[in-house]
Length: 218
Ligand SMILES: Cc1cc2nc3c(=O)[nH]c(=O)nc-3n(C[C@H](O)[C@H](O)[C@H](O)COP(=O)(O)O)c2cc1C
Image 1 (tube, rainbow, N blue to C red):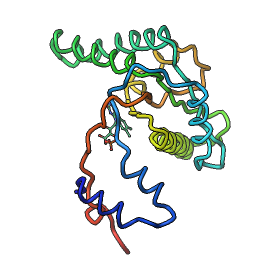
Image 2: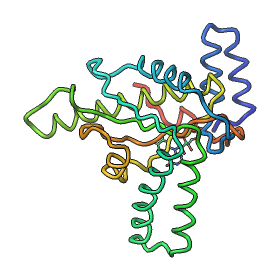
Image 3: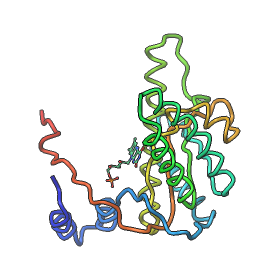
């Protein structure tokens, strides 16, 4: 596991290597879940999207699409409609009403408390088509991997500009609700959401596993 002191050693070890700045950004990024009330200029969001668009993608098809939810009304509608479905799921799972309501309220707060909510979507419209299901599933997986790489790139770029972000998985549990709420083209498949804003705290320093326990050398 890697604690703060070890991160510091890694940072020192990396200086003055030419990748020091990038390594530093990678090592200091945290998921940020609490934001200050200030706006994030849309020009800055656009810059992050352009940087995200430099990510590698399968066949360079760039299957990512983005929805920038920045208005109070847009965030409110998204929070309410996703929250409604979340509540139904929780009740179906047997979660007591009081607890379910608290969890839904927390998810509303997460969305409304972010300056911008980005919805990364996947489209298969320019990916290859196969007649058999197995290869088609592989092609879809390549699109998922490509969108995730763009999201990771975007989150690092956001951090480098002093913005905080957190990936929230909720939309993949209610794809059609999100599509309807945001009036998305039918081929845009929401992959999650990324809350974005000026950090109100530093986030938690989550322990990371040691690579020697995760890696095989052959
Ligand atoms: C695919 C994916 C789904 C995630 N879903 C959520 C989520 O629903 N809610 C949340 O608070 N964080 C979510 N996270 C953030 C992780 O909890 C976080 O990345 C992890 O705890 C490590 O912390 P760090 O990002 O600060 O290194 C998600 C991250 C990923 C990559």
